[in-house]
Length: 253
Image (cartoon, rainbow, N blue to C red; front, side, top):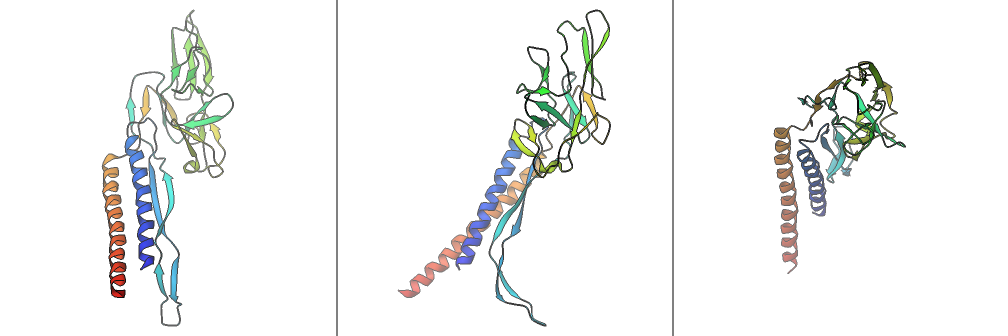
């Protein structure tokens, strides 16, 4: 009887975690470059009542469930046209590299801006690696599909302002989320491999576009219903086990 109580508790904890992940996905449905999460479960060890023998199967009782993984699904999101030259989208598997001058971070969110020095930065002020400074008196500037940053200077001459590279990883799902649409290298992601856009599977850079979140609301709401019903079912296991225990206590009286 106690086994069923603790199995129900383990199920409740797991479905609570699943609901936490679903809630985070829904909260970020409009976050540029966001990659949704997914929870998976596995059973705990089983108690063997009797072992297997020739012609007889083992008798085992499961002891509940555990959280197996929380995956980050790195499939591409839909692309939205903005017409803004500092909005960039990667049409491939690469990641933008941004830096605080000491550490590198990686992101799929391509909404970039100018800082007061006319460097290209993200919304947190981290510089886009490889992109140089564009003077305030430049007549125009552009970022090509190959990552070349160019501008027309005050004299009408074409100038090169840098080369944006994209990072690739052996295991992107192993990257650590650090907030702000950023990822860091982990021991399971592999080191960053830098490629020019359009090579090595990194994909082209499309200026004037942004990658949206890959969250599918219909899928998330369906998963929410499943998680809610799973949570309710596990609470029923606990209440039913408690009622049976109460009946056993009443027998003593």
